[in-house]
Amino acid sequence: MAAAGTGGALINNDIIVFGLIAATLGAIFWTSSSENRYLRKFYGFVPALLLCYFIPGVYNTVGLIDGENTKLYNPVARDVFLPAALVLLTLSIDLKGILGLGWKMLVMYVAAVLSIMLGAVVAFKVMGWFHPETVAGDTWAGMAALAGSWIGGGANMLAMKEIFEVNATTFGQFAVVDVGVGYVWMAVLIFFAARAPALDRHSGADTSAIDELRERIASYQAQHARIPTLSDLMVLGGVAFGTVGLAHAVAAPLADWFAANVAWSPMVSLDKPFVWVVLLATFAGLLLSFTRMRTLEGVGASKWGSMFLYFLIACIGMQMDLLALLERPWLFLLGVMWIAVHIVLLWGVGKLLRTPFFYFAIASQSNIGGPASAPVLATAFHPALAPVGVLLGTLGYATGTGAAYLVGITLRAMAGQG
Image 1 (cartoon, rainbow, N blue to C red):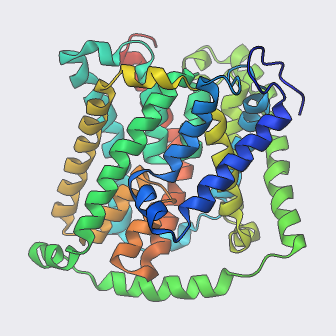
Image 2: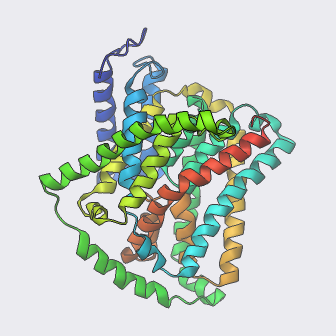
């Protein structure tokens, strides 16, 4: 990893910057898992994810590093860590297990995805009526990135940033909306989780399937969990980075072919190699989930994918101009309108199908929060249900890229930049 030559920054060597970022992430996760009551209170108000964005942003803002000129993000984090994270986070998807959850659960999940997609369009249109400045410029691209997070997760959000070339500051602003609006909604769902039995009695929902889920999930966990060996970890690395290499090898010829033979390919960015890297990595992980490689989840595939993801998040954060984040408070209202459409539509589908409140809550949080927070919410209902959040949240990694991409090209057309 070569030095970046970052001009007036105090630290100009990318290896040192990498070490600083790694130490910062380690400190955040160490303190966030501490039993110290003051730290627990602090992280109860300030999510660790937010610090992973903002502390590197502070480094950049005060001149400790120069995030815009470093080579740490591109090509290392963007071109290697991102597709590796996509592979590892999708290969553990258990589609058969998800289908076994019942058709109502799947309908609620699909309704959650569609309501988020529609909510983006509605919020963009309504905000354009009474405060057009908020949706001016590259707001549409920032919303595409946020759609990636709210349908899939952080990896999908980062993928959308690259596909639609979202400005780092705009991306940072929507990262704040993501955490601020998303975590408030999670708190609301946790509050009502304790009242789920009363809500289900009032709606007349049948909760017998949830009891069956607990038994099936407990059996699945016992079957696949194991202590990883060196061979397991080497295979894990081979699958992740081998797939990344293959995706890069195939992406450039595919992009060139589409550019030369498909006239509309620039409209949907299929003439860009990076788009193909993201798509190929995602679908390669999905295909691997149908093979024995899916059992690599038992030795920590998603944990390694998440680690790569947090390095990506930190590398995005160190490109942000934190002072510019305060310039667009109306974006929070945009986010509230967006998630309100999602809540109303999803609640309506749940009422129509008379589903348990758990189905509504986990369908929403597995999208808005993803596999990191959906298990937390599921645990609020019952500890044995946590893997349901993992399964549905992980499914979002496979669907998030495509769905958010559709949101992005729709908003781009609405903004008159299509």
